[in-house]
Image 1: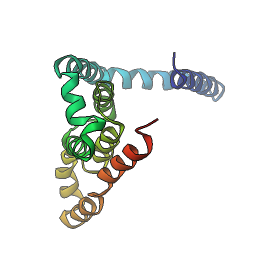
Image 2: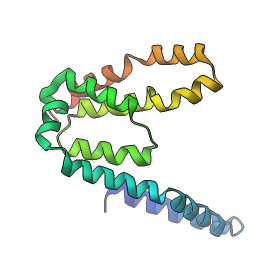
Image 3: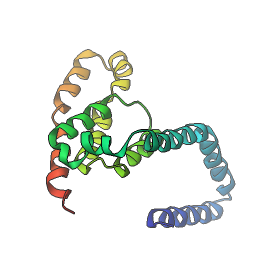
Image 4: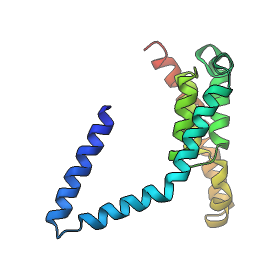
Length: 162
């Protein structure tokens, strides 16, 4: 069991006890948690399946060549582009990112991917355009264009040798 799991279990126990002493609302909270699991179970299972299948279908050498440390800035840019176009929630995207990283993608590529996924998400654009409008959407997109490659480069420079 890793540290994060232990911390989350401890937090769940503490919050359950606090909810119990706060009028017995612990069962309602646990039911809401179970509903969240149920609502996301298929997405989680499919995401983990995609991550595992990507690991065995995409040759490790190909990932290292195109997304590894030796790919340099090209790999970071590819990671940024992929991050910007990959749709999904953290539950579906992070298992895939972890799989790509474990298969040989560099830390710079992964940081660029995650940053672009957070800032550029093409799948969010239609909703953003319709609710906020084109002026604000354009301003946000243009003002964030440089950050994913810069974040990827910084991670590459500062954390590649670690």
